[in-house]
Structures are given as C-alpha cells and as structure tokens.
Amino acid sequence: MKVNGVSYRSIWFNTDSQTVEIIDQRWLPHEFRVVPLVSRDDFATAIRDMWVRGAPLIGATAAFGMAAEIARDPSDAHIAEAWEVLHETRPTAINLRWALDRMRAHVTPLPLDARAAAAHALALEIADEDVEINAAIGRNGLDLIKKVAAEKPAGDPVKVLTHCNAGWLATVDWGTATSPVYHAVEAGIDMHVWVDETRPRNQGAGLTAWEMNSHGVSHKVIVDNAGGHLIQHGDVDLVIVGTDRTTARGDVCNKIGTYLKALAAYDNDVPFYVALPSPTIDWTVSDGLREIPIEERAGEEVTKVWGKTEAGDVLQVQVTPDGSPAANPAFDVTPARLVTGLITERGVSAASAESLAAMFPEKA
Ligand code: MRU
Image (cartoon, rainbow, N blue to C red; front, top):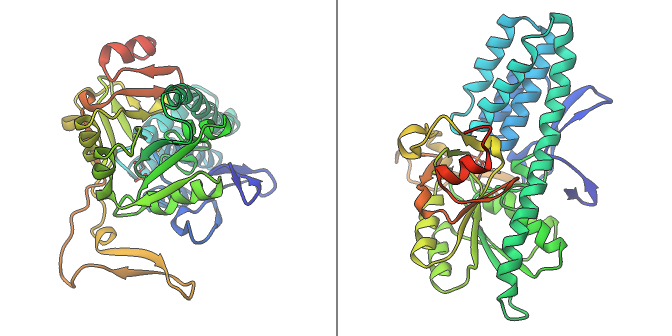
C-alpha cells in the first residue's frame, strides 16, 4: 500500500544493501521508521518486541530470519537452533510455526551448498504468496460488502467495526480484515470503519487508524468499550476481524477483546466475520479454549501508554498508581458458534469442521 504516495510492503528484501528491511511499527502513527534486520537476534527481537506484529507478518519475518541464518550456516544443527530461537518469540500466532516448518522442510533435503539460495527464494515466495492470499480475501470479502451495500439506502455507508490491526501492517500487504474494506473503497462503495483502539498496545488507534488515514477511508477511533453500544444502536453493519490462530473446527483466537465484540454482535444479529489466510488455520487443534496457548505479555503494557505530547515528543506515561500490578493476556478465543463466517482466500467458509474441511480438503 502507499505511504505518502510511495508503495510499501511491511517487510521486503533490499537488493542494494542485501538486507531485509521492515517498517518499525513501534513508532507509528507518529513516526515512520524503516530499519534493517540482519542477525538472528534482530529478527527474534523484532518479533518478540513487536517491531513487526500480526500473524501473517510474524510468519514472513520468521521466514526471512531463517533464510538469513541459513545463509550464515546451512548445517542441520544451526537450522534447528534458529528454528528454536525464532519459534519461542511469540506463542499464539500459528503462522510463525507454519513458516519455520515450511522453511526447514524445504531446505533440509538439499545439499549444504544449495540451501542458502533455496531458503532465500522461499522466504521471498512466502511474502509474495501472502500478498496474493490477502488480495483474494479482499475480493471474497468484497462480495459480502456488496450484498450489505445493496440493502442500504443511498447515502448510508456500509459500517464495519474492526478490532486490533489486521491491516496491511499486520501482513505483507493488503491486510486480512481490511482487505475487503480497501477493495470496497476501490469499487466505489461508501464505507465507514469503526476502529477499536485495542488496549493495551493500541494497535487500532495507532496502526489501523494510520492506515485508514493514509488511504482516505472514512473512519472513527472508538474506545474498546464503545463497540457494544454502537452495535446495539444499529451503527454497525458487520464486524470483520483477523485471527492469530483458528482451529480446525472454526474457533477463532485473536487479540484480547475480540470475544466481547463477538458476543455483542451475536446478541444483536450483526454478522461477525473473521478474515484469515489459510496458514492461520491450525489443523492440529480443535478446541480453541483449551488447546491454544495464550500469550501473557508484560504488565507494563497495561500500566503505561505511549503517546505524543503537544510539543511533538513521543513518550511513555504511567496510567496506574505506583505499585498496582497488572495482568496482560494478549489474546482470547471466540467459539465457532459466534462466528458468522471465515473469509479465506478460497471463499467464505462456515466456522465448522465440515465446512473448513470441504474448503481445504488437502489439509483436513
Ligand atoms: O499482538 P498483535 O498485534 O500481533 O496481534 C495482532 C492481531 O491480533 C491480529 O488481529 C491478527 O494477528 C491477525 S493479522 C492479519
């Protein structure tokens, strides 16, 4: 997508410097910074400390990190060590393990001197594939939005509520939940996006709002607690969120607070869609509540917030009393029964084992 008229992806290989570069998302929306990732620790830190984040982008970053390590030392022992170090960075997004497994399986049958080139090519392919998948999600989601738009009076925009950032910054490009929105805007449909701020790290207020602003999409940032009220009052036509891991039966694990939005949507007959690339489906698990590890992040993310002062300085302030501890579960699970549909690159599936298996027979 474009930033000040220049096309960017969230991660890319700079052929001049021969390094991987990323947009360092910690500084958005206030500063746009690009940083190189070189060493294994750079890649691990970037994922763990959320310079990059969002399940598909975590996967792509891990793939590039693995390729960089294989270029340094293509031995089986080194590949195994790199897999471990990168894998332990974040526990919930399944795309991380998916990308690492795919990289390892691709190169280990090859002779040592062929591994670096093959790993580099596959990392680039994984990134390109993500862009294609998300564009297809956008086209499939557009069909849903067109149906909603057709039933609305002229001049009344289609109002989408989204949570966290499942935008192009969370993927290599397009986003998952935002891709249908971008496609709808391109198709000339009048759209409005309610952007949940998404405490504690404010990926909605900081990242989704930045994306919407950059692309001229009508939007308003709301506090996380406002969603239920807007849904009750008919101000939301559909909810579209992303996911970090969806189980084989359609339970959806996503950013903390997603479940509450699903409950409010269900109670008010508002469709609740989840947009996801197929690598986000964990075919090895079924019961999301019991089988998905939920990342617990530092309490400091709750007790402190980042912001910009009127003087333009970006700094962190504490919002809680000295000494109050905080709990910070980063994800929750929305049971399949609350999910209207899963927007995938192959089409919209019901959130059920049967429907997912029919759509991805080679996986199920
Ligand atoms: O903790 P984050 O910012 O990595 O969480 C991101 C989300 O929860 C997204 O909704 C999810 O990864 C889907 S991104 C297309």
